[in-house]
Amino acid sequence: MDNWTDATARAALHRIFVASIAAADPRAMLADHLPDKPKGHCVVVGAGKSAAVMAAALEDAWSDVPLSGIVVTRYGHSVPTRFIEVVEANHPLPDANSLDGARRVMEAVQGLSANDLVIALISGGGSSLLALPAPGLTLADKQAVNRALLGSGATISEMNTVRKHLSGIKGGRLAAAAAPAKLVTLAISDVPGDDPAVIASGPTVPDPTTFADARAIVARFNIAIAPHIAALLAQELDETPKPGSLGHASFRIVATPSGSLAAAARVAESMGITALILGDAIEGESRELGTVMAGIARSVRTHGLPLRPPALLLSGGETTVSIGAGSAGRGGRNTEFLLGLALALSGIPGIWAVAGDTDGIDGTEDAAGGFVMPDTLARARAAGLDPHAVLAAHDSYHLFDALEDLIRTGPTLTNVNDIRAILIA
Image 1: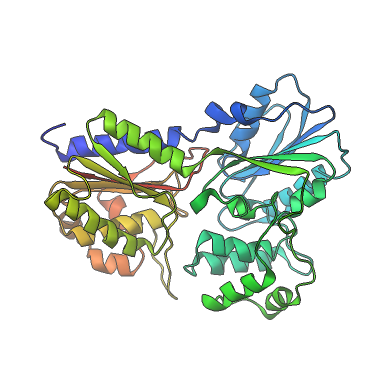
Image 2: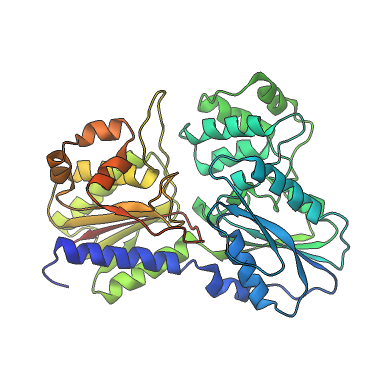
């Protein structure tokens, strides 16, 4: 397309973002990953933002198999099911339903035989939705640790290492409880590198991390935890199942961030835009990644490197936002990335961007993310907002909301993490 305008660029980016979400829809692909039907009982358990829709898709695919079980999903993410019970719980901080749901999931896999099959439906968000504290801990303890982790700047892998060693269900403990039944996990990956041990804190796979790893992360990020929690991390009496164990369990990934990026690239190229996927596992501080991506976009615009315009820079992964004490701002990692990008671009013409979480929720907000236009900073200042002050206060949501540049999809019922797309004309 020649003669790009703000309107045509925004429409193209919206189409690309929606395509990335559609590529991870479990209703379109779960049936292709199912195991052989069991001789005995089939019990379905699971947790995550996609757990309910995955359960419904399984019921549709196996209409001739008696199914039972329970899955836990986020509030507002339930869909109708016929046989598999759906429980809603809180995310990102666990609540009483997270505790009750986790207990009932563990109960559902007890007493099975080698002829039975357990199908575990796992997706992003499962870490908080399955909150079964380790012996000696309470739900309040889990909530306090999760709150501290979310604001620490630790990566998702690091956060889940700590969570697994404070849990009675994560880090392979659910799979261990299901033995000797065969267990097959069907997962939607929302983590960099698609590591099964990290997705929802790996409740059905061996855990390569240790109590020592968890203690090191707490120390590295200066995470404040209560003395009795620190004592539990120090005792090392009940390690998680390690690689080489859980021979009755297998793992299959249904949808991945790389698949959604590839779908976004195909849509871009159908519009005559050359797409470059920079990676599906990019991590780091959100605002700093915005600065880095702005530099690459400037190079494309000015020098035609690493590719000539019209071009699209695509990336996925999960960045972090390190929140200092006393910050009262609102915003997720995607709007913070976008504001960092806008400040680094400083209004250069011919560059637009979208960034959002494919689950439809950027952090705890009601938007998936937002758009950056060449005049984003100018419009913000005209509205009486200081972009630098907003970024310092981690208040990016309010800025993009005031500019009507948020992207709202509602719950998408899938989650392959963040998709970032920068269009250069």
